[in-house]
Image 1 (cartoon, rainbow, N blue to C red):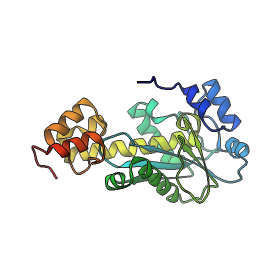
Image 2 (cartoon, rainbow, N blue to C red):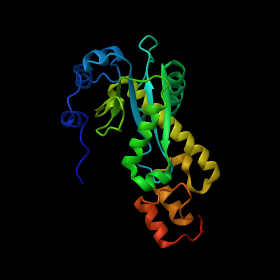
Image 3 (cartoon, helix red, strand yellow):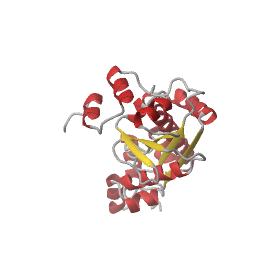
Image 4 (cartoon, rainbow, N blue to C red):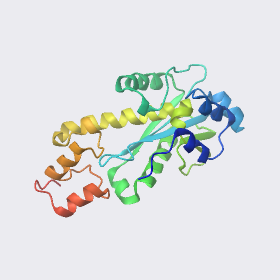
Length: 239
């Protein structure tokens, strides 16, 4: 198996970034590019939204996406890639973003949509819904990664954007915390699977529970471990 690419290697293969983002990537200063700087260097007059998702990899549950337009006059200290933050820190920033952003929206694509469309297309659908849910219309949408949703306004992708652009960092936190809370709530309905612990990812605990219990209604039927369990038949006979 090839080793994971380094942060700098992924950036080197990405589409050209605005100089302000590239400088911060090379210097290691993350999530500090202001909306004014980005607007000037992207040549945009108007609001900029950051977009990110949570939940592409798990075996169960919806994929969440968030869109955020930050207020440069009311900055939020400590924004970063949600995966690099502790759960208490994410929860605190979740409240700060909701209170201090110009606007935000969180949307999802359901398990049924994931199975019907595939996870990539479902993720792009959730992103589009998040942007459409903003009460203010952005002139530019910046999306984490290298695939962009179909939108009526200009949309650009930034590899590792959740670590480099504050609004994308904020979106990653909203999406992650929303999905984690969904998993916590679903765990109370189906406690045998341990959703509150693994958040739907294919851990040893989850795979063992899946084999023992069979698939529950929120398992993604087109993901291989779930497909294999369904093909083998469930000893518990869950729907």
